[in-house]
Length: 190
Length: 195
Image (cartoon, rainbow over all chains, first blue to last red; front, side, top):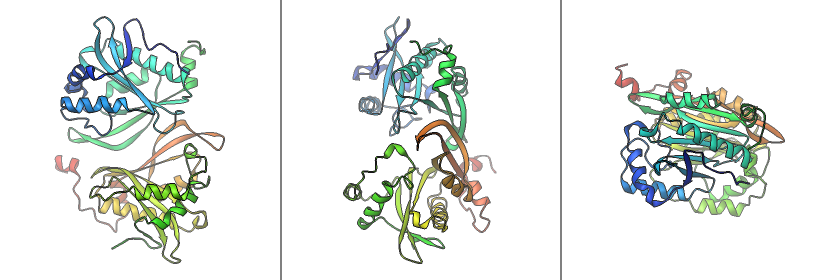
């Protein structure tokens, strides 16, 4: 399996190294990504992160056995502008994906390019049948983004957490292989 | 005071339970998830897992054997995992086939729910199953769980593509269905709003 390029004209997805700690520390502490950092579960998601926290996150990502996290590199600037994860803790039949783009780089189409690369990888290079995404209900831009990429809402887990004085839900979205194939014009061709 | 229902007692796990746990894990009828097969689990594997457990004042979960009060037999086990203190946990249940249809599973589920809501103060309890397990769905619905998520064709078991189901029971729904119980724990969100 594998062999697909993790690149477009504008971005490259590459493995993360300890040297990535500085840009990671910067955008993970941006207010706009608090609560939706998509970092390993043992690391707090909504409070300020120290450099040692970020080093711990990089270390956890380096140990992943049922998935992978890649950095999103903007080719023009050579800067790390985000990270993306594919994981299948239980079954590669049903992996999930998540994505964070640094707020300063959002609304430039990078996220769409990342999702297209990851979904193509999972459906063309792995046994994935259903891909899921897990999005906090307050994160409306992400819900719109997921729908735009063909993901359908399949339910909401109540009381997922408390934010700004209210409970929020965890919205689960899914995309089936045949739906993705149809969106590609019915062809599996790479 | 043990966790006691009408029909069952939920007690701590013991070394002697491990043989039964291995048997249930190896039985395709009591093992809901095909991904954890083949049926090659041994008692020794379970004993190692048991012996690796350490004392903690902050356990993230527990596996509690279900003791059938009338016979003293271990009829299955019920577990909670993924504990988010004061917020949520997920439960799972295995009942030995000999006890299917005896209400032991429902009594164990109700006993654990009472503990999770009345002692741990959780706001919601979840469970995960699949669309090929109507027995689990029906049992959960008897306690007030509702299907909240259906991930399409996410499970392959017994030669079929099945949907993963998440079911949830909120604290509000739990107490609303059980008027004999009083909820004295203020809801942190409602308290902010002066409700």
